[in-house]
Amino acid sequence: MTAFSDLHLCPELLFTLQTMGYDQPTPIQVKAIPLILEGKDLLAEAQTGTGKTAGFALPMIERLSKTPATEEYHKIRGLVLTPTRELAVQVGDHTLAYGKHLGMRVISLYGGARFDNQIRKMKRGADILVATPGRLLEMVSQKKISLAHVEIFVLDEADRMLDLGFIHDIKKIMSFIPHERQTLLFSATFSPAIETLADTLLKTPIKVSTSTRNATAKLVQQKAYKVDNGDKSDILSFLIDGCHWSQTLVFTRTKRRADMVCDYLKAEGITAVAMHGDKLQRERNAALSAFVHGEVRVMVATDVAARGLDIESLPQVINYDLPNLPEAYVHRIGRTGRAGKEGMAISLVAPDEKNYLADICQLINKQIPLQAVPTIENGQLIDAKKSAQNPPSTRRKNKSGKAAKPKKTSKAKTSPKHLTQATGSSPSDPTTSTPSNRRHAGRRSLFDK
Image (cartoon, rainbow, N blue to C red; front, side, top):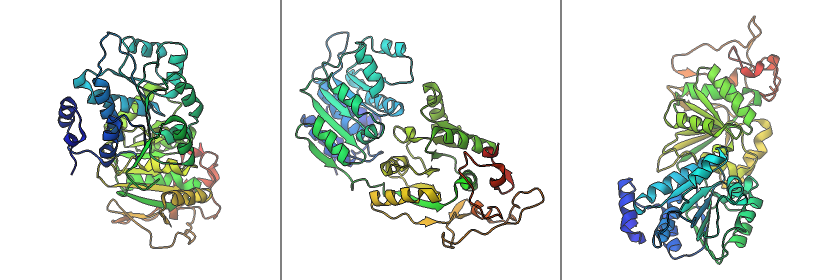
């Protein structure tokens, strides 16, 4: 079995890794580190949670440390581009920790933080700069920093970069970087667009991969439940509360739905925070900190949080809405089942999302059966024995016009799937539904207001 000492890293890095508790390199580290140390361009496919940050940061630090900065101002010689602020912070923090015994100066730049504060951070320069494309272009365009001395360029989460439309920004940034450089492209998934980008940026690259293309982690148990759009919030509350989950990441398709679902959970007595691009950076930092440290049970997020969440063992992820890009599903559920620990990914699939589920199954080459919402017994999910194709049972309304609550049992909780209206009509999307079609277990949703 390969050890870090077999990868030809310097004693300072080996000591740092030992003090940080890194016992053995991951497969992507074993494959990537020697090639990067040789100065090769690299096209690497690795899922989130596989240790790819160390896979490029360690050899980059090793190479740059051979010619340390001799002036007070450190010229930028290593550049890492990331798609999100959270990922920029995470990569920057890890890289700084890896290089501390070699005096490596590492700084992160990203949007949402005050421009003048970040200029002050760069007053003495940086050996390695980790940045998001937009903020980096601002700095370079205003001549606050120079990329003329970059020796190693890393494009992290390249597929997500393309999903977010950063291709033009990347091309602009490339015009400021020397043509003679080492380029490393890391991506969780490969697509024709990634291949095209690699052909543009890399010179005779070495391709490495540690898993089946676009595969999901083997330790993640994937489930899909057939629901109506209007039932999603109540079912989400039912699952979290009934299973006593203490740390759950929930993904929605839009920022508005993230806020509304968060408010709904709070009204149900479940502590939650929302995370999306409209939040100020300090609000996003506070939300992430509260979630990571267990101060709240749930974080409801858009895909901005699918990358860059540095949580060692997130037990479950729930897709409140399925993403319209199947690759995004791989990134979302990559937040769980990490570091050799098991995880669970649950998708709430409305009738108009069945095509999204089919696209996801085709991408990951795995079938995810569409099931009826389960019951809960002693905090455990018990899959319904009835076929999901059978119509749900209806309940008689009480005098108040609300669906009557089911009788409580000592062992199992009844799924709210069986608490639909007696009218038999399909509830509409929760963001547009009316009081007449949003009644579950006798409770009134925030979406009714």
